[in-house]
Length: 218
Image (tube, helix red, strand yellow):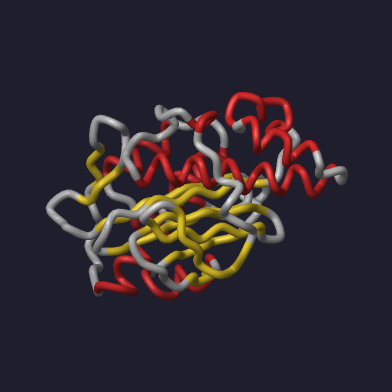
């Protein structure tokens, strides 16, 4: 299942010390290394959202120990449960399944228009050139970016693969699952961010609040 936690993490004002007990030592140290509150909060809630998902779907209440392969993709030590998570300024996302998964979220930012030549194919560039409205173009760029990120994360390659040569124009903005190559893909522009997921099978999406997470794992 896909889990989405939407919040303004730049101005969350959530006392992170209250959540520290839900982190394992490695995650706590990682969060502490960040200088800015937003980054600490995103690091904290990515792990906590994973804990929420594991407890809700598999009844696992223990703190998972995360290990990373050579590409940097995280795995749960001693478990065959697959997961992936992502975060941006206003969302944290997590997907868990028994099969390989990849997810990415991205807020709408004009920065993407400045670097689009680095990750769009020629056909994608032409398509975006036809989008006149600035906001619409930024939203569409964010969604294409999440597709390229999630695809690379699914395959354990991150952005090492040729993202500028991989075309995703066939994947439309939709709340319905679609097919891309031999995979299922979900890709949608939401109010404040875009999200894309690659998996072997379609799955449900669940939007969760910080209050619900606290009640469930607290």
